[in-house]
Length: 256
Ligand code: ZN
Ligand code: FE
Image (cartoon, rainbow, N blue to C red; front, side, top):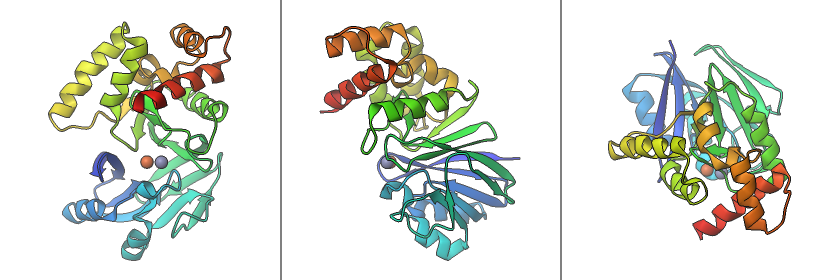
């Protein structure tokens, strides 16, 4: 049996851990300290680390974890990522013996050019590509690139559990309400997620089904978001990528 845990790290990161009671895999362990403490407490050995992109808040644990557990470290091709043992590209698969896991690797550039996501066992580990009701900032990619990556993720089954690398959901909902305040699914999500946070629980994983109806950054094909983009850009007939770009620009402005 597989267990999924979201370990809080830094201010708002999650390190996702999948384990079978004996062996564990961790996604984006930017800080080795909370992960080592968890593994110690539960007497788990770490067999593999999965990295989504090169940012330090995702890769900062690699070297210490490799030294301590001699674990495999899977990552996209980028010399800035330390201690990598297996380099991955979109379309590759990752097979881990213990816990028995198999993931498909999807290229999801946009937040960074090297960003990849891992799909398997009903889970999507999407790093800083999708957040709860949001998406990653475009530090290296452009709107068309990110929109294409999001389209790739939108083709996964609705029941897919979306495991994002940061807890940004409530502030993303605050932004979403500014352009989609009449959406009853968004209102219901806000109530549910405020309750989770008030009790100290993660709002994640969410499901792709929930993101599809509440996350403005996944709705660049729909009428509400297209109408918003027409107003924001002051011109008619934006393409889906331009709709996405308008929402992203509006969020960046809102963030200040
Ligand atoms: Zn990042
Ligand atoms: Fe990050």
